[in-house]
Image (cartoon, rainbow, N blue to C red; front, side):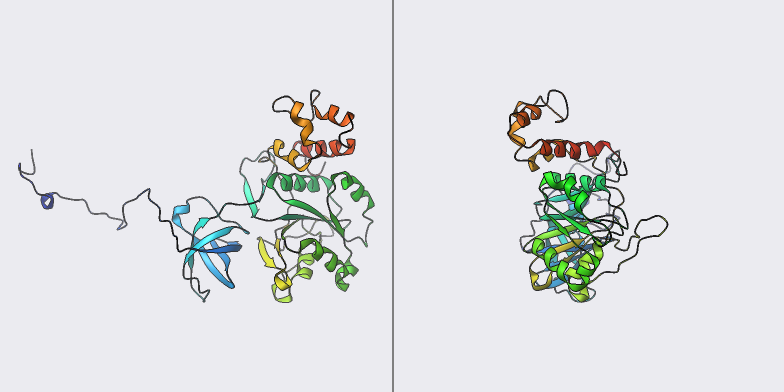
Length: 336
């Protein structure tokens, strides 16, 4: 049965009301050409603290970004109230392309990749020489993550008043990783702070390390008093530190000569996401030797061309050993 006659008018057509009261969905997204660039300083339960010019602005992610999340260090485009006044909220509408990414997974079997920091120039791997004991496998994994993500590694050894650094430095000598050795007394006097700061000038540096190694203590010594974070102590029973830093935070160095990003202490650093073929890029003396490698070579098999490359005198054998040790760390547990 026809509800309408032959000559119906558009006004006669019955339309269903939109119960949600929102606009119809569309694939067309606004360009937000008036958006202002900012830098993400912290992320806390969906709220992002951003630096816009000289103002700290609270923002949230726009719906059109979908599941794409912004992390500390991201350069973002922001619209809305950018005054930074109390109880105001801006909106992040775009995440700019990243120059580097520090990523990790919970373990090597976990396919879920978590971005820790974006756009950092350098990764400071902080480890104590004692109390707690150093964990070379964790250092190796952090090095792999740095090389894979496009960050330059820096080794920071703390508590040299409790144990000498020689053995650890010998282990990483072939890699040519820059390093700084500090002690508690030197931190208190400021001597160690000056040495570390020279490595940070003009750079954005992410600090990573397991709990109790003095990472946040070192960061506090580098930044101004009002920007310092709380610290903890090492558990006398387990020999492990307590997590006092619960979220990553970007902090400017005095005189705006650079940035440090303090990250929560880690007890594992999964490398499920790492493509071994990208790690070789951090070894420019070995990379040309891979031209003769078989397809999908792991660089640790009988037909690997790197063995002949080193035998012909093009690179130091210790460099090849170090590369293979780092590549193999994905197959080993950090406590091995």
